[in-house]
Image (cartoon, rainbow, N blue to C red; front, side, top):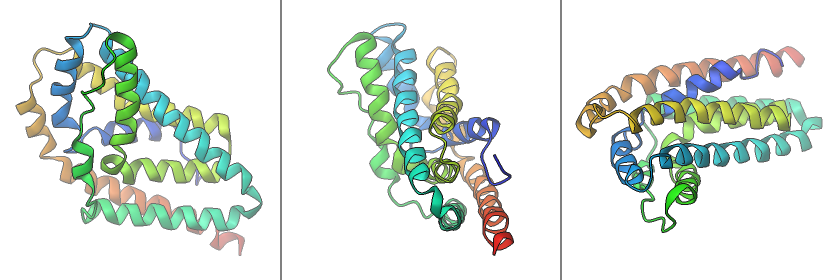
Length: 214
């Protein structure tokens, strides 16, 4: 690992930031109200399914990066530019596909834990446009590392940063949709702060992995 890498703490924090998205946070009470009626452990199964989706993404991205490790200089440059781009996307709110991420996937027919698992896996895909900038930035860093096991681990940690607050919301009777909608109003400040961090990370990657080696 070099200074251009991503740490488990950063991955967990990124997951927690992702949950503040206005097309994720306000929907959680409705999703879990439906889910808990199907079984008390169904929210746990949803988070597990979500973790499986993100972990698979980490494996695939790391495998891609591992295959192209001989072109690490170019891969690092591309990843740095991608991260900077997503940083500006967050700062200037350029994500135009969030409306596609408002699907809840509550039409999954399977009941119980299996249904929750399938719902969680589908949410991991459905919410990609909404949490895309942060998720894609982590995936770009994982690709540069090229370590499949570590990539899977980091994306699992990311999913825990997203999933643990989801479980708190699922099992809290005092958190309503209106409360979460009010919290989501501060998403703009969270996103802009995250955007600044991503731009700095991208610039550091370009400096430490590209310009220093030229």
